[in-house]
Length: 113
Length: 113
Image 1 (cartoon, chains in turn green, blue):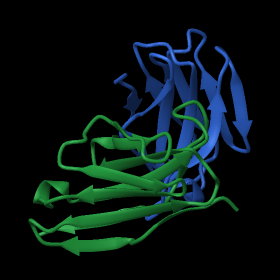
Image 2 (cartoon, chains in turn red, yellow):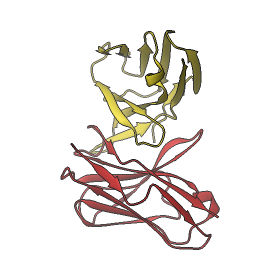
Image 3 (cartoon, chains in turn yellow, purple):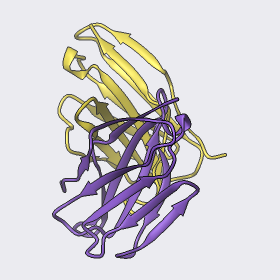
Image 4 (cartoon, chains in turn red, purple):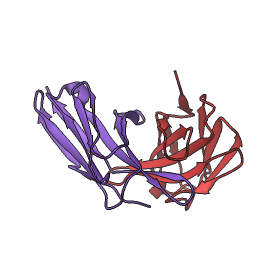
């Protein structure tokens, strides 16, 4: 079974803290994605990576950074968490940037207080 | 970023009823994907439609791609409580040198026993 795993299902952090969200896939996919999902706004792309050490900004990159040191692992970093970053964060991987199916992890529900 | 409009945003129906969910864009899709997301999980691909006018069936779910490849619909016959979830369409657009996947905001379906 193909799998995308995320380090935490639930996370509570304080304003100003540095937050790391980790994502690991076992499908040898080159492309990995980070989305946030908010009621009424749908899935919005934060960043994606098409190769190790490569990254591209998505639609809403402000306040986030990413790291891809190994093919299977893609990390999302909130340098200084703010309350408006409270959201569901979904990681996905795919064999293609957009044409093929994206496989999603279960999500991390982050609350910033 | 291309825009996809999904309607309705919410749908609450009785078990056994039929329903249709719509996905529209002003742009032409290379292909279109439909995902279902259950509470607490990431989206999972149901089907991909590629050819204008294409119809695909998945048990009680019928997916149709518009002739002009700008719209799609998902029809569920005799809905069951297990169909409850968030249905997302995702349009694949050909950008500069690569494909781009854009998600609609989703239709939240509740099927009441």
